Length: 472
Ligand code: HEC
Image (cartoon, rainbow, N blue to C red; front, side, top):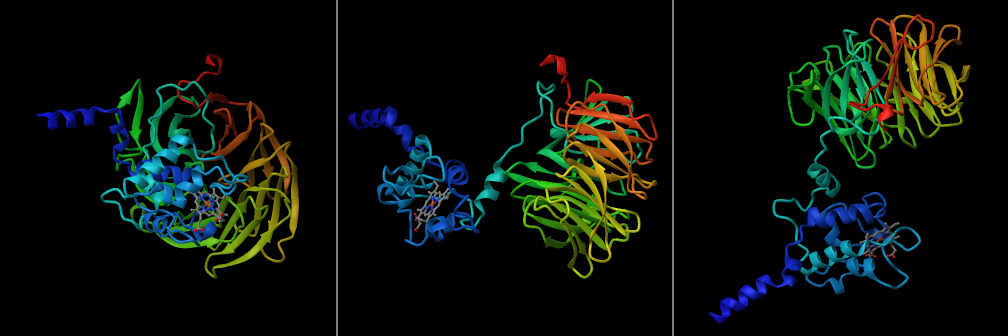
């Protein structure tokens, strides 16, 4: 009787809460990711200590095991986090100290035996495991802040415009600008959109610094309707999200489909460009090549109509051309001397176009030395995108100077400035018949212009559901 009472008291005592088992993956791994992995990943391995898997974490570095199960005070791993001495982790001059509550979680986990959660493979990549456990938020019915428009694409029938929003894609009728569909996505941002020949939409996107993806969607799938807007679940409904082509550790920033629809290319923060063979349809997409040809983020990709060449634009201040068959670099174009955001090819791939932080649209010859053929003249700010008209020798560029400009690609000359946007224009697209141009801005605005036309907006709307600038 007395014994039972004592046990009950002990159970009720406040100290018990600390003995609650600490989960390695849910409680400790996030601390590693936040505070340690920048220097202790598989590439950097500072102190020869790689913390990317549980197994490696227990193995330790130069000085051997840094974790002594059951004994936080004998574990360098914990000691170096809480120490008052000069040698601390992260190193004092390199990073903030680990918050005290997080350090306590680490101590408690070691005290409890430094165990791995049941069912988790000790060889599993921890960053990937954390990513798998992350649940994307559901977009609100109405927004209080505008969502950046990083990407736009007209649907193949030309009747709608797909806009990359915040954890969703939104679909608007054109030119009316009425919201018809919202497609929830895992990616926080869609950086590039392209339709495949059968009508499947390929989307490159991600969550900055956390994850990146390339996914294929069927926007014609059915979904419940709320106030006349179809709500599609692009996170969990396999009829909407058909396939995931890529799961990356950081954002995928650009994407292109070859004119024949057989090849898809995507590139991003991991500096690589990947190519998929799409000729057997979306379900049978096959990764065929991974190209690492840039020293920094790949920001733009284009495929030539004959399927021979890949052009890339990068933060390393170059545009490059890659021969897909020979699997070799054929050209590096350094003229921008600044970040290159976008690239395109003309019809017969005799010319390439690139645009970037030097405010210029430039054209260069594919054969020969790759000398700058001509700069088209400038925008008043960074040029983020360049797209070609579907039939005419006309290019459109989107710029930080709040305009979209049209260029005669045969004469390498300015044609027209399309005005109206009230912020940086990040995205631009031509409709399938070339009769409309759409631009999307940092503050969520979409502007439509007729082409050819007078350069004044045909229609402007904010593509952030429920957001009105006046409601701020
Ligand atoms: C800014 C880079 C950086 C960060 C962030 C960082 N470390 Fe280190 N770490 C180093 C360097 C450099 C060394 C090797 C020099 C040394 O041991 O002092 C090292 C060594 C260590 C060692 C000793 C390994 C051995 O066997 O010699 C441990 C343990 C360690 N780090 C733990 C951590 C923990 C835990 C975190 C996160 C809370 C962390 N580090 C974050 C740079 C970093």
